[in-house]
Image 1 (tube, rainbow, N blue to C red):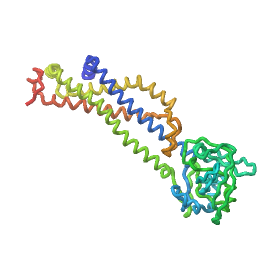
Image 2: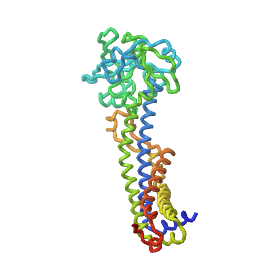
Image 3: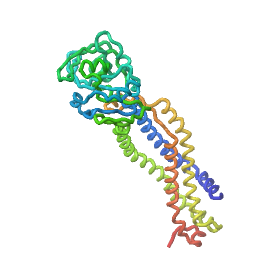
Image 4: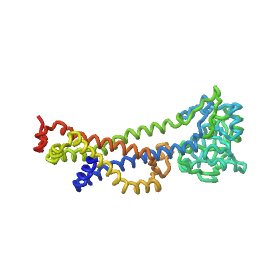
Length: 392
């Protein structure tokens, strides 16, 4: 019990030097937690948005479908198996029919991906209920990015050309009935949504689909050779890879912050051992073993870390809480990344993140506090009494 008391007295007696070290170490705590919370919050937001609006609980792809090759869309469809149709009837899944087409906004020619979806579906968060409206013209739903790129607004009528099941080119007018605001660019850029049954009829592809999206709480057990199930892990692989890349890149920043903080602790302990030679000699002559003296200096270093936790909490907690509630405003240019990032990112600071950061820094602080004191183990009793640290 005497060692902790001595350690507390020594670090408090060091005055301003102690509080400067504590402040630098607290900055490392707050900065690491801040950055990690920002990355974790953005990852969670993107994941939730993609799952809700696009991925559901997984997707069954037609065997010929390749989302990165629009030229495969024309043949990548087939009639849904009976069990899939049963899922759709039970509102456990939603079918999508995807075809590449061309449309002519204001006399210009643009390529577009036309997607048929049931207006009454509830699996995805896309506002498909607007596709139930019709005044004799095919209703169409587009995202705000698509509307800005093509200069579209609600009420505009555009002509879309596509190929039907027989390879015949056909063209139809589509009225823009709604422009949706979504954070998921992969359901927005270069796409227009139309009612599924109407689309199937015009393409002569009754009951056909390119993919079937299942609900988040639904675990499909049946499969079909012509349909390949893609689970959430596969569909979010790009997002996971992005997170790992960010983690690796940010680790260099964390390492730099920790090194700067620990360097201050290390230098302080080196100076302390040098300046307190007589004190060390006195402690040893009074019966304290060399290992106990080493423990004293190590505990002092750990106390720096503990004090830094409290100091970091004083200014870090209100700061991190503010950003958790208000979020970070993100520029519109972030859309170019292709990830489902909203105009605000809300950091997430979980208990595991805070405990891991605090534990890591405390362990490293204990190590760098111990290293300068190893010289004490080689002290001779006579040298200790004279307060000399030279060894032979």
